[in-house]
Each structure stands twice: as C-alpha cells, then as structure tokens.
Amino acid sequence: MPEDFQLNDSQTLYRRWEDSQWSPFAIDLSDDRRQWEAFPADRRELVLFVLSSLMVAEERITTKFSGLVGAHGSEEEATFLSTQQVDEARHMQFYARFRDEVVAEPGLIAAHVASARKHVSPAFRRIFDDELVEAHDRLLANPSGAAEKVRFVTLYHLILESTLGLTSFKFTTDYLTGEDLLPGFVEGYSKIHHDETRHIAYGVWFLRQSVAADPLLEDVVRATLRDLLPSVAESLSPPPTESSLDFDLLGTSGEEIRDFALSGLRRRLDLIGVPLESL
Ligand SMILES: [Fe+2]
Ligand SMILES: [Fe+2]
Image 1 (tube, rainbow, N blue to C red):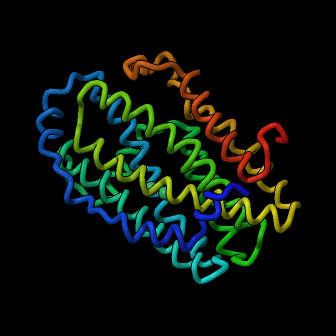
Image 2: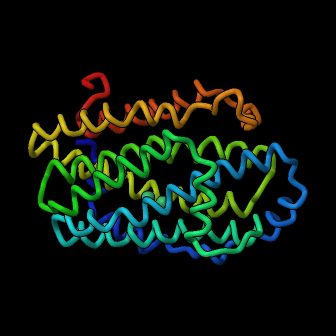
Image 3: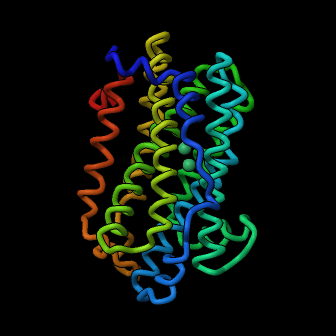
C-alpha cells in the first residue's frame, strides 16, 4: 500500500474537514451579478445548463446519503460520513444562492431543483433519479449488507463524485477562468471541489478495504460500473445537434472530456484493486 494512502482513513479525513470550513454565504457574487446581466444568450444557456445539472445533482446527493451514515462501520467512519452530509447540504445551498442572487430568480430550493430539471438530459436523470435512489433504498433496507454498501459507494463516490463530478469541474472552471467569467461562482465551485476530493478519498479508501477483506465484492464494483458507465458516457457527451446548446463554446471536444473522465477512473480503480480492464 503506498505510504500516503494510509493517510486517507476516516479519522484523517475528518481532521482535514475541521480545517476546511467555508460559508456559501461569504462568497462575493457582485461581479457575477453584473456580468450575468450582460451575458450573450448562447453563453447564458450553456452556463444555465451546467448550473442546472449541478443543482439537480447536489439535491440528490444531499437527500440520498443518510443511508450511508447509518451503515457506518467504526465511530471514526460515522464521524467522517456525518461531515460529508453537511458538505453536500452546503454545496446545494451555494448553487441555490447563485440562482437566487445572480440568475435573479429567488425561490425555495425545491423550486430551483424543479426548474433545473427541465434542462438536464435523460441519461443524467437515469443516474440520479433511478440508479442512485434505488441503491440508497437498498442500503436503507439493509444497512449491514456489505454488497449494498459497496454498490452505493461505487455509484456515489466513484461514479458520481469522481468520474462525473471532477470532469464537470475541470471543463467548467477551465472555460470560465479562461474567459474571465463569474469569479464568485468559480470560487464557490472550487471550494466545493476541495470538499469533493476529501469525499472521493473516503470512497477509494472504503472500496479498497472492502475488496481486500472480501474479494467477492470486486464483482459488485464491476457490476455497478458495467450498469452505469453507458449512462455516464452519454451524459458527458454533447447534446444532440438539434439542441441550441453549443458545446464548442467550451473550447474542448467530447472525446477530450471522456478521456479525462476515463483516465481518472482508471487511476482510482488501480488504487482500489479492481483494474478497469477486468470489467
Ligand atoms: Fe457535493
Ligand atoms: Fe461530495
């Protein structure tokens, strides 16, 4: 086991959380507000598309998590997982605040999520509304089931937070920073990203421990990836040509986006001990 990997156990990650507090209400959004008013229509649509995906994702990720806290092993793991639950709620609050104050459509979070849902793709809905909800329900029904917990963490930490989340972060912030756009949004999203790297470290640690203790669980990791990867690839692809969304504005290609996602997944699967090739 690499030396630095040991550092990512639940207790170490919890200590890191204590040193990484931030408030979604302390970020200055005044430049974002000014810029938003003058945004050309095509860019506004692209940013709204990204923002809608993040809003829907964080709502699901916040409200479909408590089953994992209840399925904790050690007290240290319970402690870390309760911090992750707070983080996810904080992320949802930041995206809702952005809609309230910059997009200037004040509303309750439920109304933001409902309007954001109109912009997300069917593949995205399949992942967050069907697969995640089902994996969470199964874990709630059987908190001590090793296979249920491994499926949930593979889906949540390895697929949603790593493969989809880190990829969205990279290409969205590269674009906004390169164009000098929405500095407050980039600052908040970067803090969210910092939290996410801690969550992902937990997921890799947990899955690695689980498959080392019971190699039969490798099949659960593999089956979950096989079930989900087609929808992930679809949701990372540019929308169909009849859509008015112009992904070329991002200055990258669908292929580059998918390569980035896949190489990160490959690295993490190697650490876990279930190589991508064994799928
Ligand atoms: Fe999050
Ligand atoms: Fe997260």
